[in-house]
Image (tube, rainbow, N blue to C red):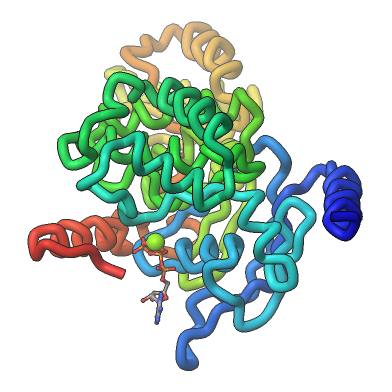
Length: 352
Ligand SMILES: Nc1ncnc2c1ncn2[C@@H]1O[C@H](COP(=O)(O)OP(=O)(O)OP(=O)(O)O)[C@@H](O)[C@H]1O
Ligand SMILES: [Mg+2]
């Protein structure tokens, strides 16, 4: 008992010492499978309360990284510290600190939603009263309270995913890992799940998610690591990454004669804009294009050149991926996991 008390005290002390900025820190994390390097010396620091995304195509090493951070897989080399606990030396403490939503469903569909959660709570050593209270709370959070007594096999895909998120939250983890939280769901259901994840972020839950959906990384993540062939190619907030990938371009469309276009070009260059003639108008590269548009229009007006339309194109995360890997995420086997899952489902079993 006294020994337990001392251990708890030590853990609490360690916990408070670790009220540091970073709740997950990985150094040179590497995983080799029979000589094949799936994850190659990854360094990561995830801030408390942030939503951190691992974005990459099929086979990039996202799940493998997540498995190492969550102690499911032992790294070949390197280290990971989660919530102040070393994944190699203190795996139990790490597991108590985290919740996990796996890429493929691990629900028992022949049980009710409540039973799936209840078993999980028992595995985590939660007592009856605590379990009951938390199950009600997490089911309400994901709007499944009315479905608690129904068999999971009668749930839709989106409802099953929500139930898995609820299960991941049951023991109040410091960090929630979500491996492809919206894989294979339709766009509307995906947005619905994002809303729950935003609620969790507002409640201060740190989340690490893997995705190969650009929109998911862009809309949900505070910072994104672009991962390809087991390596982090770029890391930053979606906006930072997009800024690094290129400048925003404004297109001023004018149906005026070629001579007029040249006049407009000269007027813009005089105002120090990086302008080029393009078919149907001029293109201007700028850092803060939204603010530059009035000045661009004034320059056109000063030369009495009618502008028929203004278009602005900001770099996307797709451009970021392209600039760091030389290929498009959409072409880089992004749909591979989905295709595998669809094929596996058609065969009546899950992959992995
Ligand atoms: N247990 C294993 N044994 C051998 N190779 C593995 C194993 N697990 C993963 N790999 C390989 O490691 C690489 C990374 O796999 P991982 O599942 O981490 O990718 P991912 O980015 O999660 O991809 P997906 O988008 O398909 O989920 C792949 O080439 C995969 O085939
Ligand atoms: Mg994966």
